[in-house]
Length: 281
Length: 271
Image: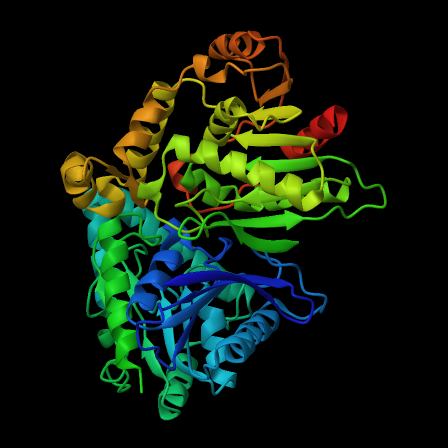
């Protein structure tokens, strides 16, 4: 395994690290792109991107971990584009650079938390993306998930405190609907107002579009968000869509969102390395 | 900004060199020394902003990751405080080589300040040493780390695993301990726990600035040790009290602008 620093983009504004398999290992025609999780720089929370990159290199898969414009060690963009459009351009530049430097033309985008929004958007527009990993990004609660959440809350706080909290949230929703003239707005799945979140129908359509193009999709979840709290939640949420049969969606029970414990880091990384190996041609 | 890797093959360190971004280029370089790894992740943005500010003030600046941390080679278990000390000396040589200068200020944050003070014994001595919230009582610092980690890995947040994990960590990790997402070696743990103001005896007189929110009693021993060999240390009071290890803010970013202003001013005055 070797790691080399790289700067790329029109003004060498992006800084990143290639992690490549040792020459003794047959190299796959597949590159994994890793980048920022929220505001953290490219190494990821608890350095998980570094560990993932090295585990990939050990089985012959190259990766580039880099910082989006204005984040981590990268310079701000000189374009005045919107945040999401800039992130798509950044990811495409990363793929261009990977292609030029190492001759790879097929990529998997790893999106950690809100990074998944950028990976999802880029996959829609770039045919070089053959795989997509959306970790803790889009959460669609089911009736069972809501029940489990409230049941856990009742066990912890008692029925009266939990009931009052539930009533206040409902009342706030009524006020929102009244304020919006009766239309209401869908709440962001993970409470992040920075991005445009798809409705469930849009999400299904976009996933189906990617699957029709042959893009492999993995949507892993930690137990870090109360809204996603059991192993079959993705299957239940999309039961009639045909997606659960075509998309892997492992649930890492006990894992927090930033994978604080090594046992959870290793479990996710082992799962994803194995998943990536299945994507090779 | 120029990214680079340096060091021996198999022990490569990641660094970023910030060239002066001012018409007035100063004949002085600055080296930034990271704190303990969960704090280093939180303060990455802070160091980036601080380096940019110092570069705009005309300084050559180098940021780097210790071996086993950040984007450098190795794993956290490879770290010891002694290896950090050698990494600081190597990084200091690098920034002097790259800038062609022999005059350098070191800025160390928390455990990075402790390592920087120890590195002064290796012969590569800075003109000015800035110790930002230095760790001068290892036992107290280790308790702070344990408390923050215990809060982060409480049953409420993570279920049943972590406590078992803490209890069994030593046997499962060859004497090392799992803490904040990685393994800390037994050597590093022992080195941290034994930190005392005596670690801050600087071999030859230099300018030293100690920056912290308050000047608590335990810092008196530190300042006395710093001045023992003829150095002239001074304390600078910062306006912000930063919870570096707060469990509810791990993996978030910190950029205390008032502290950055004070540090840039401190470096300019002593360059």
